[in-house]
Image (cartoon, rainbow, N blue to C red; front, side, top):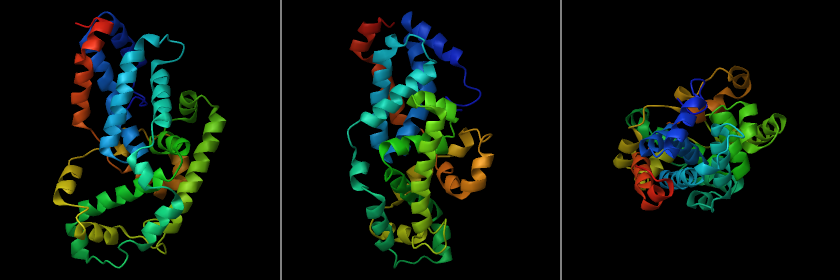
Length: 291
């Protein structure tokens, strides 16, 4: 379940907020846990780096705690929270992955030239299936980061996590029509690049996951430790996002979106530890008189 699932109940958040202001640290912990994993996965898609995503998630959680007394109920809590998430993502300082992937043109040059002389036998591809999955997801992340931050966030919300345009528009404070236009522009830019470069989309395109993987293995970029860590994830984004509204969209963009929605929906254990640190921070305890 995500905070945008049909089963999400706003009343549960509001009850936890009320209990929090009555002095319950446990209620605040439950509130954070209801949203932490989704925020982390938004950050992971936005930045493409687990450590950077964990840090950004931590910054958002701190903002949640410090600004919770400013929630007046003029909008739903979910809208209020994810509007804050959106603004913090857009305004955060430029992160390391964004500095390494500058534009579609430069990223395309890399894909055209890196490791394209490498070959894997069918047996090697079978033996290195998880490593190839890792490479594919890193490549998709690089393509996503080529979008500017606004386009990237719109695509993540509207295409990957399948938020209804009315819900996403309220978070971004635009009209649903404007959100749909922004989403279509982001899809056009990203899918045009994938059509030109990705062999999974277009057999005539130059890039092949297995070739890149073999080069990464030889250069030590992909290691058994990397694959062991990556293999622990069992949920895909598609498995936690309702697909009810995808049918029409998929008639046009099914192959493209399938690649993104089959990526892992991850849990970062470090975030759970960090959230407990927030709850035990003396300043937080004193500010909210938590027990």
